[in-house]
Amino acid sequence: MPRLGLTADTIIEAAAQMANEIGIDKISIKLLAEKFNIKSPSFYNHFTNLDEIKNGVMLYGWKQLEEKALRAAVGVSGYDAVKAICYAFYDYATSNAGIFDAMLWYNNFQDEKAHKATQNMFDMIYKITASLNISEQNSRHLVRMFRSFLEGFCLLVNKKSFGHPQSVSDTFALSVDTLIGGMKSLENK
Amino acid sequence: MPRLGLTADTIIEAAAQMANEIGIDKISIKLLAEKFNIKSPSFYNHFTNLDEIKNGVMLYGWKQLEEKALRAAVGVSGYDAVKAICYAFYDYATSNAGIFDAMLWYNNFQDEKAHKATQNMFDMIYKITASLNISEQNSRHLVRMFRSFLEGFCLLVNKKSFGHPQSVSDTFALSVDTLIGGMKSLENK
DNA sequence: TAATTATACCTAATCATATTAGTTTTGTCA
DNA sequence: TGACAAAACTAATATGATTAGGTATAATTA
Image 1 (cartoon, rainbow over the protein chains, first blue to last red):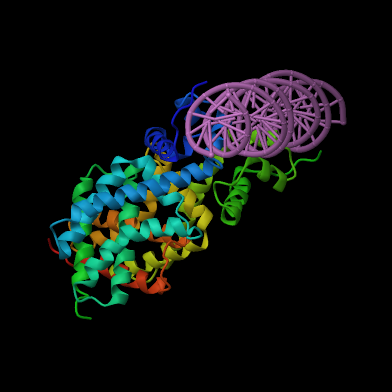
Image 2 (spheres, helix red, strand yellow):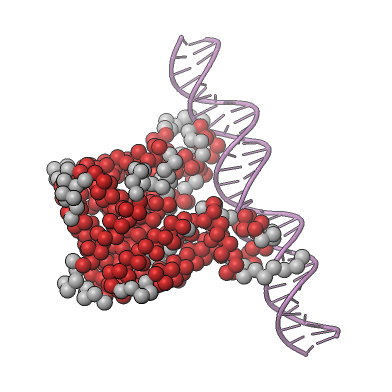
C-alpha cells in the first residue's frame, strides 16, 4: 500500500475539523483512520494514544485563537484592543465549538505546554492592561476575570444554554463593557 | 441473592460522589456496579445507560447548588444577596469538581428538564436584579453575564488553570465587585 | 395463605473500540 | 544496490457497554 504523507499536523487538523463536526468526545482512532484510509493500528505510528490527539487539538485551538486575537488587536490600543480581543475570542470559540470544547476540557495545569498555550493568548490582555497604569497585581486579576467570562460565555453559547430568546450578542456587548468598566476603575490604584 | 433497596436517587448520589473522586468522565457502569456489589447488567434495571446516569448527576448538582444558594441568600437583599449567591456558587462548584463538570458538560438546551434545572438557580439572581429598578431586558443580560463568569471562573479554578501564584479568592472578590458595578450602572435605565 | 406477577438480579453472549505484538512493505540514503 | 527506519498491515488482547434470556425474590392479589 502506498504511503500517505501523514504528519502530526495533518492529523491534528483533521481531528480538529472532526471535533467541530461531531464533538471532541466523539472523535476516535477508528474514525480518523477511516478518514485517511488506513487501519486503526497504523495510527499508533504517529501518536501514542487518543488522548494525545485530543491534547493536540487543544493546543492547535489555542494557537489558532492566539493568531486571530493578535490580528484583531493590530492597529488598536488600550480598551479598544481589549474589546477587539474579546470579540475575536467569541468569534473563534463559537465558530469552532468542538475545538473550543477541547481547549477548555483538556487544558490542565499539569502540562507545561498546555499552560503555555493559553498563557500566550492571555498575555496579550495582560500587556495591554499593564500599559494603562493598572498595577501588576490588578492586571493579573483582570486577565483572570476576562478569561473566566469569555470561556464561560462561549461555552454557554455553544451549548445553547441561554434559553430566553434575547439577543446573545447584546448580552456580550453589555458584559464586555461591564468588564472594561471594572478595568477603568482600577487605573492608578 | 438478597436484593438491595437500590433506588435511582441512591445511585445518582453514589455516581455524584464518585464523579468528585475520579472525574465525571471516569465513572462507569462497571465501577458503580462494583460499589453496590452487583453485576454490571443488573444496573440496566435502574437506568437506560451511562449517559442517563451522568445526566442525573448533572441535575442532582444543579438541584443541590440551588439549595445552597437559596440558603445563602436568606436574610440578605439586593446587591448583597447577589454577592452571597456568587460566593455560594463558587463554594459549591469548587468543592464538587466532578459534579460541576457534569453540570457544565451535560447541560444542553435540548433537554427541557436540564434547562429547568439551571433556570431555577439563575432565576434567583434574576428576581433580585429585577427588584432593583433594572429593566427586564437588562436583568436578563446581567444574569447571563453572572452565569458566564461564575461557570468560567469555577471551571478554571477546578482545572487549576490559573498559573500565577496569586490569590484566587482576591480575583474572585474583585470580579464579583466589577460585575456588581455593571449592575449598578444599569439602575433606572 | 397460596398463587401470581413484576422486578431485580444473574450468567452468557455480543459488540465496539483502544491498544499491543509481530510482520511486511516502502522509501530513503549510504 | 543493499540496509535501515518508518509506516502500513494482520492478528490478537483487553476493557467496558449493552443485550438476551433465565431465575429468584418480593410484593400483590385471589
